[in-house]
Length: 106
Length: 139
Image 1 (cartoon, chains in turn purple, blue):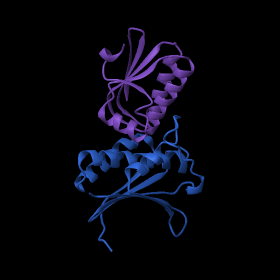
Image 2 (image 1 turned 90 degrees about the vertical axis):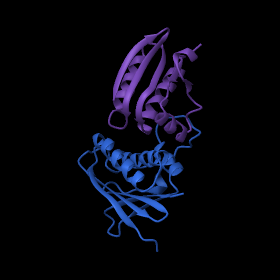
Image 3 (image 1 turned 180 degrees about the horizontal axis):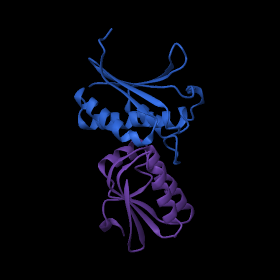
């Protein structure tokens, strides 16, 4: 897994790339939680995620919960087809705010 | 009794770093057995989650153990058999997550059950192996 952190408006954008599985989800969790501590609204860009397992999804859920607790906006961006399939299997596709692109964010 | 043909047997260490390789094997085995791309990707998700459960729960994340994956093809179904020698699996103690709850963890087994048509846990007659059998009926 590779990642990149950037800013877009008020959002901190974490782009995850490649496979987010049990091998690297502990890293993904650390990255998301560390960035959330800054207090900026957060977008997790999943457009380049080729595979995500339940441990990766658990990182997103934890981030979502921490963000909600701290009144930070937390959303997913450009979810790849594979990642969306797993979100649907976990019945979480309707839990997260999901944007197709930056243009959809108001 | 339907004729069963073993199409893959893979022995791997209980190391998360090897899951990616295992997923490639399952994807290709599933497609060779007649699954379309979407079905094969779901087989990958189910078997990956099963391997994760073995690594995390049967072996407590110790990477120095083994997982055996066998894939069988029958006329109307695909069978994935996972064998480990870790902590015995007690079905009665599994805390399955209600998928309508929003919390991290406990997602693996419900996802496996959603994808597969049959999920069986049993021990070898000698009691030293945990065997998980995932069955997908071919449509």
